[in-house]
Length: 214
Ligand code: AP5
Ligand code: ZN
Image (cartoon, rainbow, N blue to C red):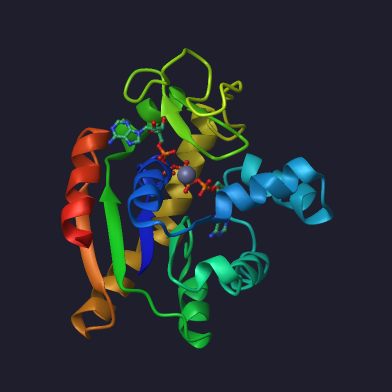
């Protein structure tokens, strides 16, 4: 099964990716997590990406497409995968088609901008795994600690309100056109397109995803 999760920053892609990975046993490909790993490793690409990410802008299509192509070619992706945060521009989506990479399901999470600003201010992440929490909406079992490893949770560098608002603007301008792109593809039978009300509680969204994926 090949799935794309589409939605604004903070719409819940990473949260539901966790659920889908566990339930269906397919790997999550999060371009955001891959870039944060490159930053942590101090690679030249990571250092370049950090400036762009901290400004709330998108990293260049060439870099991202290269990263994803390499990842999809790996052994564990041969039985399917879950794309979280990719594609994010029309050229990225076209690159998938050009490389013969089809998808079965596109799941869009619809959440109003003001709700997103609230979510981001309470987000905490486990850098090692990408697991995501919220201090109120999805709290860890022990405050400030990851449920699985017990390690410290951190606040993401790009979750400051002005950066979140910039990311939302970039989303509306550069990523939202993919809604029409994949809806039109679904009308031709190229994929199944599902629009979800992303404002429901985490478990309610997961339950709906479980129903539609079967
Ligand atoms: P990336 O890491 O992909 O960030 P994003 O798309 O901006 O999305 P987020 O991770 O912020 O949100 P999410 O939808 O995963 O929400 P989450 O589940 O965490 O990208 C970061 C940067 O990298 C980009 O800005 C760009 O610079 C670069 N980049 C990455 N991919 C790229 C690409 N393809 N091309 C170019 N550049 C790229 O949830 C958010 C919070 O809400 C959490 O606290 C969570 O607990 C809570 N929450 C989740 N669901 C619910 C719910 N139903 N109810 C209440 N709270 C909820
Ligand atoms: Zn995410």
